[in-house]
Length: 320
Length: 320
Image 1: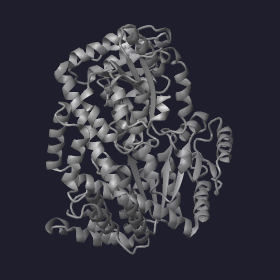
Image 2: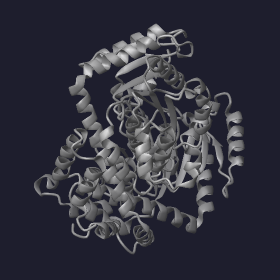
Image 3: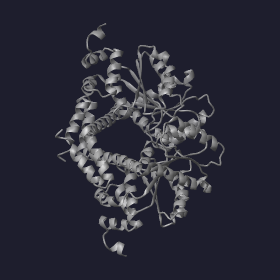
Image 4: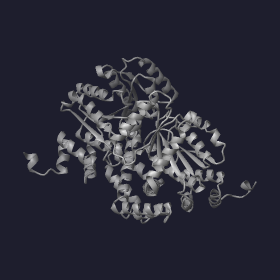
């Protein structure tokens, strides 16, 4: 086979991803996830082909049915003839791996569709955390040309909140129990939500949860009145309304609002990438050796701590 | 008054903290929390007087009764004639401020004792996160000469887990419900716990919770068999046993183990301080202006992202 006989270069893969080759996409994701040499130049070259997808983030507390919602959203966008990339974002956790795989099984229906691509990213071994990796992989998805990118988080935490900053529209899913509204609020989800989804709304308390949310939202001054949609994702109920709510938010943003949001996102990405590189420069073998030596000396009170900090700093920025 | 008539220098405060002046301690904490000019030199000068306190960390899920435990521990150490500094560590959260103050009210009994000092630190406006501030304030506590430093976290998250790395012995408190054991495990508390405390053990299920914990612990290979203590902190029950469990852990560590732990802690502190300073150098006014300019240009596709990253990096490390 041709694939086996000739060495595949990053340049080949870059051409092939633009021709919608899923294998090339897969390989480039691995390259990017591990920050292999050349990943940055490759992303720079693909960059002119990005920015034409709608990124929808889906987050919420565990048990809110996020995976089923993502599955139903993917199905509905496919019915509209749109291509869909799904990115499940899992922060470092040795405990959630199994659950994630379990959820994926339900995905078999959309996963068999060649116009749907599913990938998980974890921050376990990735540099710079989950949101940096998510943003970089999302750029690859955009270069591939998906109409819709669904960014799904597994849990709720600061890492997941950061991931949601990579989205154009953020859907926060909760279930109809007042505890969930409070949990979502505490986790900082109220601030990042564009659309609320009360999933499993065939359970008691859905209307009460909607009222609580409405009241909470009326307390905060917002230009945009965030839509609240009730769904039963397991039965496909309310998905059309959820689609419309996302559209409504995009219409509210308009091209100016979207540009502003994307500029802010880019600012976060650039800032984070600079800091990651600085840290890599800093903590190379020599830097780590010096750090260890100083830790021993400072603990033994042979050197004061901030004198050691200054010394370490001068190693990397000799001109400052 | 003398305090009003003469300007107080950092040098004055440094002398006075060594003479156990609580007002000087208070002022130096504010200096350190806000990283005011000279805080680092001041900490370096105090550094020879640090390292003689036992730092005990108390963490666990909300509702585990951590504040009451801290109050009882403080009381029992006072009865042994030891001085106690309490540091309540609260991560950035606009919602927990009230709860924290509520808990503090219970503290009035120990708070009226001049040999007990209570202070909250928040990471809201502090540089470098909660654990950096906690470590720096704990050094001030040590210079002041407290025998015992109690580090209490308010919630459970990565920030609080990091804070616990500042402790010599970590007590993880849970309540007798199997859900709590799982929650503690998921939050990464099993890995950092030296001593387990099943508080509110007059509630049903305390023995079951202890058995579950024992089983979980037997699955992990540990040199030290972590003590599990049942307490009813609100009634002062089990506090002596908790004291003994902390002592047992310290005896297990020995001076070698403690030294190793403190070296690791110092390594984290040095590393973090270097990174904070680098970021401060990086994102000064000029750096932020350039970052904003590039964010706009990259979003408009006038510049590829990683070329912008390289350019920003060269601004701070011109020789690399």
